[in-house]
Image 1 (cartoon, rainbow, N blue to C red):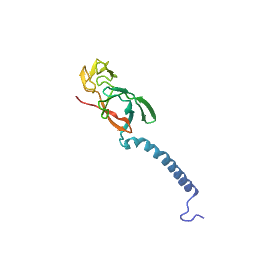
Image 2 (cartoon, rainbow, N blue to C red):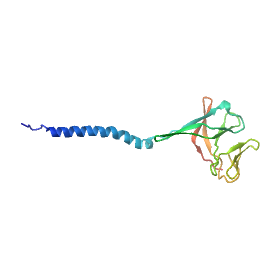
Image 3 (cartoon, rainbow, N blue to C red):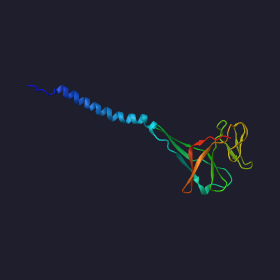
Image 4 (tube, rainbow, N blue to C red):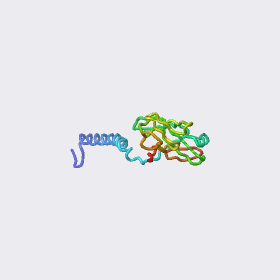
Length: 164
C-alpha cells in the first residue's frame, strides 16, 4: 500500500534522469561559457618582446632586429617576425622604430651612406629618427615603447603612431 510522501518508481527515474542531465549540462556549459566570454574579461596586459642584448646594439646607427612574436587567436597560434630598427646615440637612451612605411606598408631599409631610411613605395625618405624628409608618407615611422631589463632591450607591442 502506498503511503503519503512515497514517490513512485517512475517519478524517481524522472528525478534521477533530470539530475544527471543537469550535471552533464553544467559540466559542458560552464567551460563553453568561459571560452566564449573569456577574452572579453581579460585585462589588457603589456605585451613586451625581447629585441636584443644591449651589447649587440651599435652607437649612432640604426640596426635592424627581427624578434619573433607568438600570437594566439582562439585555437590558432601563429609566429611572426616584427621588424624593428633600434637607434642609440649614447648607449643609455634607445629609440625603436617600426620598419613599416606609413604610406603603403612597405618595408623600409637603412641606407648608411645617406643616413636615411628609404621606402621602395613611391620613394618615401625618412631621417635616422624616423621623421619624413620627402615623398608621400603622411607621418613618421611608428615608434615602439622601450624598456631595459637585465641588459636586454624590450619593446611593447603595438607600436605608437607618431605625428610630425
